[in-house]
Image (cartoon, rainbow, N blue to C red; front, side, top):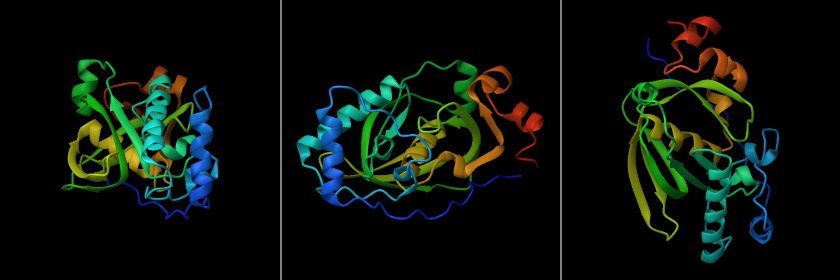
Amino acid sequence: MTHQPHPVATSPATTLNPLQIRDAVRRILDDPELPAIVQAGHPVLRQLAAPVFGQIDDSDLSLLIERMRDVMRAAPGVGLAAPQLGVPLQLAVLEDKFEVDPVSAAARDRQSLEFFAMINPGYRGIGTGTASFYEGCLSVSGYQAVVTRHRDVELRYFTPDGHAAEAWYSGWQARIVQHETDHLQGTLYLDRAELRSLAGNAEYAEYWAHATPDDARRGLGFLRD
């Protein structure tokens, strides 16, 4: 049986105007400390982020991307969206350089992903293939759950210098692209998750940290054929 990604509700638009967005960015850039990552329950994570169209100048945009990269790496994580710092802009950074054991890497089709920033992104699934794996989120600290996502996606976005771009991703790279783009639509991974799979990090590490979620599927009773 092929499992499909869960549909999600449409999010309301951000309530911040361009001036308020610019002020939020300046607070982050003026603070010498790395900003805290916003956690689930904050309204910014449940609102449609505003498309980037000049709310901040090119210099501040570059500095914001650098700050987001630093926060992502310090967390550590493989992606970070601007709303996770309280900034409702359609901007995210992605990078995956983690060392993963070969068995898990092969099962998850996980390959290294070079750092890049995407602005006003959108993706679509290619074909009917899906993959179900545990994933977590820096804004849902302490938990992981199984999410069924498109195996292959086409991504369209703008680069920080304003050029339109498109790229195709598969496996774990496609999962990261979907997860981060979803953030910009006010969607958390839990909206697409198999809730019976939800596990605290300690429980996940003790019972379900395998290359595939098959043991968890049987033990916790989700994704039944």
